[in-house]
Image (tube, rainbow, N blue to C red):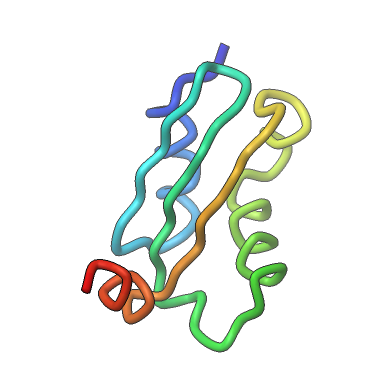
Length: 80
């Protein structure tokens, strides 16, 4: 069973992140991912970048991943 820390490491290895938080129960995960790479990208394009970073793990190890993908500017604005 995959841990939240493992999912976090998988993402961090392949996607440059300013902030990365992952929680979950071994099958279902929630992630907050803040990356400058998300600038000028739609929500779908942002999620595709994360899926690409996870590769085959999305099919084989991770059953569900809910993502909040933000640019650093969006993250700071939300923190207000």
